[in-house]
Length: 432
Length: 143
Image: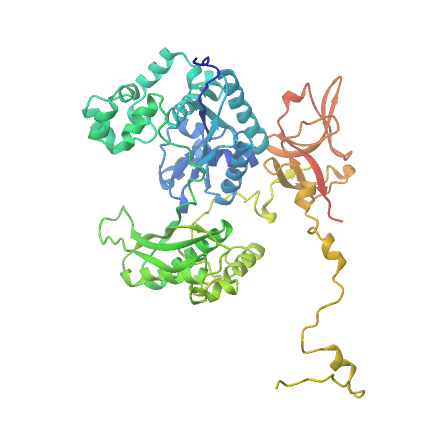
């Protein structure tokens, strides 16, 4: 009665991610960066968050502070760029939109990676992987690798393998690889390399004699659950080929949005903090409106630098909103509830707000009692319009202010043009 | 007993203006027939961009394509997904720079041409010797 194996093929999962995403996005518009060591720096030009293969080959560690690299940049021919979030956001959206054409089942996992539900024979799956790789490179202009396997954890592992072993030419279908080769890979790689295993847990795993991914895949799932957690047990089961981590349609955006930055210059006054929170309130409002969402709860927080153990302060407040809202006035007002907890004179290195309990903006009108006067007057939509037309910072609410570049805004001294989102910064093509 | 309002007498001395600005809303007897036909304004994205994932806008710098009606400062719509053909206006990567040229594919080889006699042709054995960044589909020429 049982159908032949080819007939009851289980759906598989493809994990697609962009190689060195930020550096690749920069190269797509500046071919002179091809073949040169490139690093992209974190907020405030702090440290290297993306390294091109050439930069890795120079031995530059991930997270290396720019001030350490700068003196040798010239000698190395190293190009450093500030994070061009406008560009990366647009390139990411293009990649995801394109990938979505290959599967009805797409989970955007992060700015540069996605899981797709796929089905077919091993040959078809490999062909699909190659098609997607070619299409993203050609259409959008950035290189990707593809890992395909029966579970998300194995798909990620297959992708890592595809990236590191040129024999795969960027596409690895786990089940198509000889079992002995898979085993030898899993034996070579430490458990720390596996998706979902936190660094702090590796020591405890090692204590149980679990060193390699292969060790973990052979561990008893029940023992792992008892000693660690259900999460770790899922990882074990996934390594054994049992899918435990479901596809999620929309991971980000459903439950929370976070706006948080480190400051170029620490903030030491409540007045400065008020300004920051006002800007975040407006950004949150714009983002919510864009996604057709309203928030019910707002959390505002601030913190001192981890590198400065003296005078630490991590205030945080959680504010239930009077009604589900995307109103900038209400959100900003709620964020200001943090201000009484700010200690004057303390050097705050970061702050942020998080909006949670998100729901779609309903058509149902709220009771008049809860109607929001600002929403009625479309304050949020108006501010968005003005911002779109005249640029970020052209209109502001109260303390967010309008111009005069507050000294806490992000430092991006080595920013490339925002090629795809700003008419004044289009890529130039030489007619000569 | 209710109040009966009789027909209003229009005073012949009333100004024309006061008649025109009736203080109560008056239903228009004849709805605009155009409303039934309005489907939105022309959207350039819809007509000029075939595939948003592969389309970029670039700006021309230089006068080597004047003969093709492409001038310094013009914007081009470029589709990366199109197969470059003989006669395509392409963006090619030359010495690490995005460069606009006319692509000629002939029996004797491949030529990147300028559309201005002041600039020489570039010859290569085959298209695979070139890095074609994209194919221009429209020029937004400043008139």
